[in-house]
Image 1: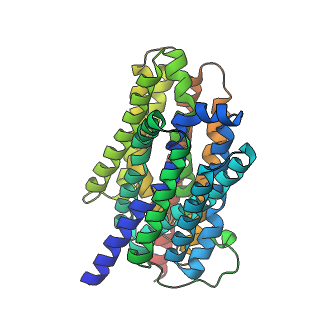
Image 2: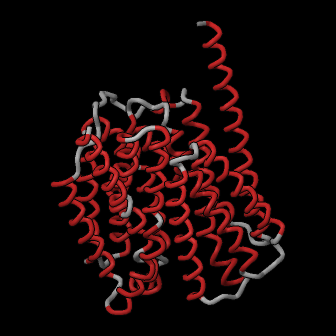
Image 3: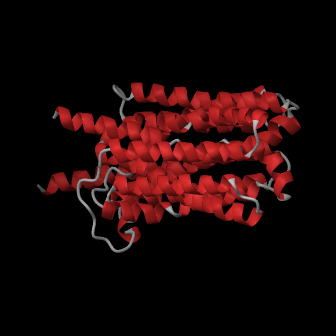
Length: 395
């Protein structure tokens, strides 16, 4: 029993470590965008989009493969691709080659991210899984709070290339410790020839809680897309002040996830999920009511509320989405992850097209999406109770 607990704790540690790679490939080089645009004579936003596209889409393949060969081999392949592509990006001279290699780097990041999330579900179930997903989300938000600062420091002394040199070193380090120290968490290998998308659709909890996760994540990512215009252009703060406020929100999410991990020792996942949903709905109402104000407080307070609610509900929602899945867990986690990239991209993209009264429509979107999630969860709960009553009456 002690060996089993030790393996689970070690696997959880590796999940917290592996989840850092995906956002690090985004946030570390953001401070170098202007210098890179001048070097390549192109807008570097495409490099971010290609990376995110690969990160989302290729999780489906890696999830299927991890069910067949194991989590550890997939993590090693992903780390190798991530490290090698970072090395080649360091020497890149052509914009087209750079974009291609960013896509390859995203493919490696997809394998690493998939391994991080599915390992938690391999090792833990129910309430314990929800608690560890909260820790995973806390680790995930360490990078957005620190990586832009590190990237700025690198740019102050070196050039944009050194960001990718650091990613290469980080990838090599990860490969070595996973190779020698990471245990295999997959207990039974799958024989599925294709990702089992249709069989997964029979699980109502997978659909409902998956929708809840995707909606919540889309609202957080919308903050990333909309906040520069709202805070810098409308509220008039400086880029330095914006960076501090942006980083403070990431810190809020980390603290809230750690608090959630502790609270769920005594409070159920469903209760924390509902608390998170209510907080997010209230934040949307407050933001909509304050849409005419240009003060920083009228935006940042609702965003802090949104982030705390997000932290409270995301861990439980992820765990509940996967609670009924007993086989092909890698594919189930991967499809959930891919959807969580696709839906936020569409919603945040649609919101970014709005030119006027953006705070009103953002707040309205928060309120409506979380209200829909709340209703769907209540309907799922009601149908589950009804099924249980029918089963009890037939025994």
